[in-house]
Image (cartoon, rainbow over all chains, first blue to last red; front, side):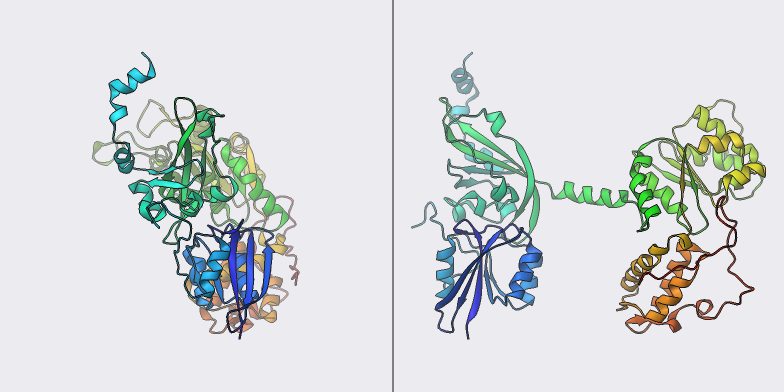
Length: 116
Length: 421
């Protein structure tokens, strides 16, 4: 059975803020983890509540985002949505890592000074 | 003395700037020309939850996660094409830190230029505004117009003009039947006024010996134990004095009140020298003030002095569309207070409640809902949960006792309120 993954977007990056995100990437993958559908959705306005509604409405299984407030994080978790938050990096890279099972909350994917 | 000499003399050329920045009590981020993070001081590490080592080289929008990062990024020009003071405008917003906390902050972005005006780096200074915002919220809650609610045109108009009336220093006369919310309105006027931080003193001029009332209102030069005793007027200094039923005040005291309004001074009992006071007076009456003047209960000159601004609270039976709104409003309040899952009224109960004429006005409606929520064990309030007198058919010969009507309102007429639904 497939699942839907939503990545909040800011340009080609994971949006730094869930509540201020105005665009999302919705990817459907099949049971083997292969992408079967990809949708870019531009939101009417930035709102964490509306975004939570969209996530539940579209039966999203996992959300990849940057900073999210505790209230919305726990709400989504309570609704059994997996939330990988605090991610800083390119959206495509974050999604690929997630599909490989290698993305963890708080992951910083941008090159860093003093790190290889 | 040129700049080089100044720097050399002050020793700034040899200063340990990172250590200085690290110890500053507000958050500082040093960013490169592309706004990638180079350094976070200790206060900012604590605010964001990130260490410099974790985020060095990462774009600041992923570290600060400020509301200003996405829509109003303070990106500086690559060279010094704008004056530093023009580039360093402060902006307020929020950040969401690593611990998922949203924090109100003020950001000031300062470009650091070399002597040729070329951008070396940017200092982003962040101040945590949580404490200030908390205080602002507390004050705005206390300054909100109390529990005054209403959706009908008259109440909406009243609530709309309330802040403007409160801002003026004129005396206000509130009229309206008992239970319409005169006390609440007086308190709201005080809370909205520039006097909000000072005292709100309520005076109930209940019948008592004149000398005692005099001392109670205007103070005593020599009270018990020989010390001066302040009266209600002195206690309201710089604040608001609310006279809850002006016509209950004896005529002698009304005269002294008039003097206070005219001369801004009172003479305490047993004294001779007037004491200057800065008090705003709000008076209320449940009866028609013009009738009271005619009956000799209220001094005409005082009436005209108080009548500078007059606000009339309509009885609930004239606020038809408000009844359903108030029922829902108080249901929510009392359901939360009694921790009950009461969701609404059955159509029969609603019909009874909306067709009643509420001689006790909002206070009576509030008490009925409180009682109904208290006795209701279901999710819906039914007629059996309502007070008995509401359920029993009213004999035609026993209309509800209503207070003396105000001028212009037909006596004894209680128009049945139509249920909007």
